[in-house]
Amino acid sequence: MTPDLTGSTALITGATSGIGKATADQLAALGAHVIVSGRDKTRGDAVVAGIRAAGGTADFVSADLNDEDSVRNLASRAAEAGGGHVDILVNSGGIFPFGATADTPTEQIDEVFAVNVKAPYLLVAALAPAMAERGHGAIVNVATMVSAIGMTGMGLYGSSKAALVLLTKSWAAEFGPAGVRVNAVSPGPTRTEGTLPMGEALDQLAAGAPAGRAGQPEEIAAAISFLVTDQASFVHGVVLPVDGGRLAV
Image (cartoon, rainbow, N blue to C red; front, side):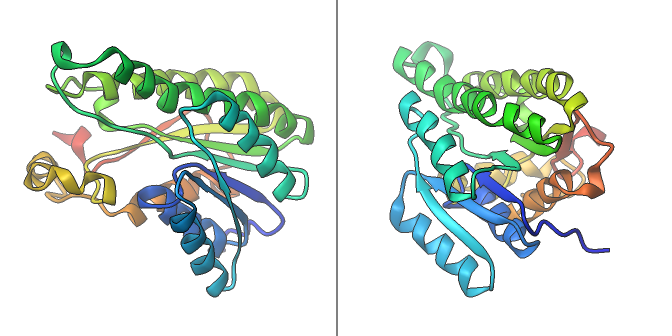
């Protein structure tokens, strides 16, 4: 039976491109009212227009995940746009600079942890208690395979997502008894607008896994969609690898 998210509101950060956009499209197709969030209004409006053209329901709410006030405002505006409630939160927005540890500016450390850790933390703090009061809700955090393995140049990004993995498990323990399921996906190399600058390096990174190729945003989104629906009703606190089989080698 096809999952039905009719009547639910889903807030997706980083939804103007890549995995976030693919997730917005898929959840809207399942009937959710999708709140598309990102910094670029032009791209956000385009995503919303595409969803509406396909028969779905969506609104755009701009937010800068590096700005605490903007994140807090996002939570309240998303609830307002959703008729007073947010039932699904997908923390897809993130930044992933790569580079040597000794060459990393302090301000970049602060920015990565603000966007990749602090923003999801603030959104969960603002939205999960209301989900718990209603007795249902689903949260999915987008992590990365390099949160669990050491790779040269990826320490800053990987460590921020490793923090998000631990928070996923902590939030599952905290909110799960009240009916709020919290899980994460751990993508491998995925071909998105954000990874275009990696060029052939992305394919080389993906080549070592059984799939032998980079993933597509829609493939990651499909895993997220599963985790937010009742098909995953007994799934709490997992980190689901969607990495082309990296764990097998």
